[in-house]
Length: 373
Ligand SMILES: [Mg+2]
Image 1 (tube, rainbow, N blue to C red):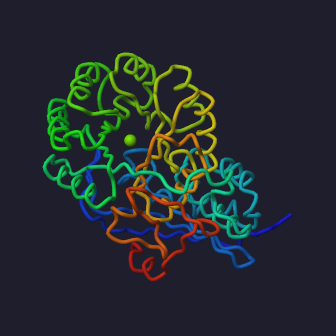
Image 2 (cartoon, helix red, strand yellow; image 1 turned 60 degrees about the vertical axis):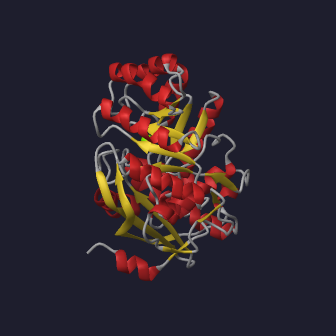
C-alpha cells in the first residue's frame, strides 16, 4: 500500500482584488477572500487547496475566518500523522471531529486529491473515471446591477470569444425593478445570447407565481433558485407552472437534498458547487444520485481562484452528467491569481489541466503579497 504520511498543514487567508464589483442578492463585493491550504507529507509532496465563499457568511454560514479556525483547531490535527492517500477514511475522520463545515473540509480534500494525483502521476480527473471532455463552454455571471453596463460587458465578452452565454444576479431590488432590469438586458442582448436569472432564494412562492411568466416572456431562458432553500415543495409547484426550466442551487447541498428534489420533481437541473457539498468526492456522489433521477447538473461557482477552478474542472472533465454548462469564471474575474500556470480559457471554453494532481502550483510571492495581516 502506498503511504504519504501527513506531516503538517498550513492555512493562509488572502484577499485578492476584483476587476469590477460583483452584486449578490445579499451583498456587494470588490475583493475576494480565500483560505489557502498547503498539506505537506513526510516524503516531501505538497498538496494545495482552497476555500472561498460568496463574500462572507451570508450564503452558507461559513466565512474564511471560521474556515481557518475550524481547520487549524480541529480538522488539521485530525489529519496529521494519517495517510493522505486514504481520502475516504480522512473524510470520515473529519466528519467525526466536526459536523457540517463543508467549505473547510473541501479545502483539505482538494489538497489531498492534489497529493494523490501527484503521487500516482495522473490528473485528478483520472481519479474520477477519466477524461470525458477536455473543455466546456462558459456561462458568464453579469452582476453590476446596471443593465447598460452589463450589456456592454456581455458584448465585449462575446466579441472577444470569452463567453456567449450569460447569467444575471437578481433579488437585491424590488420584483418590479428586477423584471424591468431583465427586460432591458434581454432587449440589449437581442437574442444573441442565453440568459439565466439567479434569485438567490429571495422571492416567495406567490411573488414567483406573479412575476416569473413576465421574465420568461422577456426572454430569460432559465430561473435559478427563486424561493428559500428549505422550500422544495414550493419549488416543485413553481416547476409545474413555469414556462422555463428551474435550476436548484441553495436547495441542493447534501445527497439527501437530491433525493428530496428528485422525488418531488422540483428541478430540471442542479447547480453544483464543490464547497457547499464538501469537496470533489461528495460532489461526485451528488452527480451520481442526480443521474439516477435523470436530472442534469450544472457547474456553479463561488468565484474560485485557479486552485478551486482547476479542481472543479477535473470533475467537469470527467462527468458526463455535468451537461448543463458551467460558470467557472473566477480566474478571469479576479484581478490577480496566486498560482503558476493558471487555468486556461480559449474559444468561449474553460479547459481542463492535464498535469498530475491539480495541475497548478502556488506562487509563493503572491501568497505573501496578498496574505491578510
Ligand atoms: Mg446560485
